[in-house]
Image 1: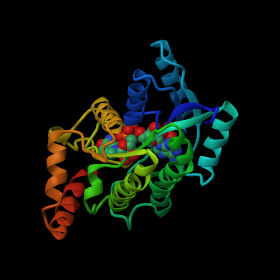
Image 2 (image 1 turned 90 degrees about the vertical axis):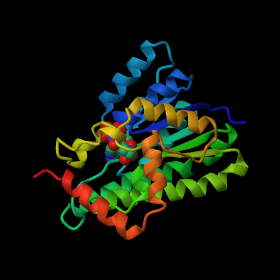
Image 3 (image 1 turned 90 degrees about the horizontal axis):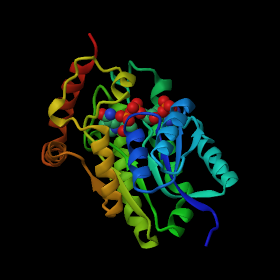
Image 4 (image 1 turned 45 degrees about the vertical axis):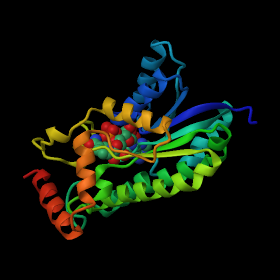
Length: 263
Ligand SMILES: NC(=O)c1ccc[n+]([C@@H]2O[C@H](COP(=O)([O-])OP(=O)(O)OC[C@H]3O[C@@H](n4cnc5c(N)ncnc54)[C@H](OP(=O)(O)O)[C@@H]3O)[C@@H](O)[C@H]2O)c1
């Protein structure tokens, strides 16, 4: 048995769903390592968690676009004498607009964060996750079920996350490692501004708070569930996407996303 102490690694913990996940895991007794680029945000969240009487999270500023990001995280863990029992791949972003008009460099950076870094973090620590009978929580999206014109690369990255997580769930189950993928619908966070949504994009009926998503995700991981779609209407949306023809869905999503592009 390793003598390194177990911690829960959460990427994208400086805002939105990641910060809510950090609060949820801390409340449930997990010691955390928080990862994102904005270090001060991580330090402030660590202070907030420690002030509630929970163990103070470790903070690791890392840019997950960098191909050596996971080596950097693993090195920090080794120096601290810790290793993950759970990894939460939450960091990610989207960009709104036709793929051929958006910056290629930014879209490839999105693939680096949403796909490459998530894959690397999922695979890098499997031995430690197995030792601790822990797990992986990957954050996809309802977008994972759909083709996404006007947000094509983002939807495709989330389809990857869903497919990859489903397969890992199967592969790692015999090793005692749980893998859960969460597919949230709309959640008001910094995501919308980063993606370039028009201010009046209104999806109230489907909207869940970051706290609701974090709670549902935590519960699903504890229960060893393969997939969780927080919110009844989002579950209905996900179910309907399996019934409708792909051509129809592509048209509908393309029109829906076009309305969100600022005039
Ligand atoms: N909000 C929604 O409607 C929604 C719906 C479905 C799925 N999701 C997914 O939920 C996840 C969290 O999104 P959110 O809504 O909470 O968005 P958010 O408020 O914008 O938070 C995104 C997080 O990702 C981190 N991040 C982005 N690029 C990074 C990089 N290069 N290196 C390290 N960290 C990086 C950000 O930290 P720094 O900027 O400090 O690096 C931040 O902590 C994403 O995977 C998103 O696709 C969101």
